[in-house]
Length: 95
Image (cartoon, rainbow, N blue to C red; front, side, top):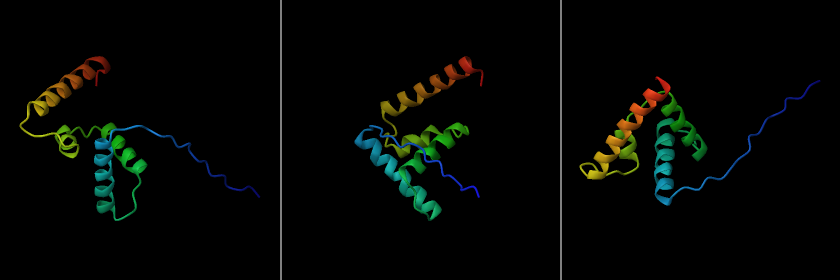
């Protein structure tokens, strides 16, 4: 009889700013509220990556989540830079 072997992925540490951690914990809380299940930080990061890879590009939601002030010059600069990044990516990758 062959036993089923469970493959465990290696866990690693990542250094992030305290403000980023707080924002990430907000995502964890929102996902827990939405799903009604326990959500880990890894689950939240995986969720954000899946959304990004799926093409759900709504930078205004990310800016809201991570606390960028609307109406500030910084917010306008970030939006302009994001647009330039997307244009560069289209030219480079043809997407």
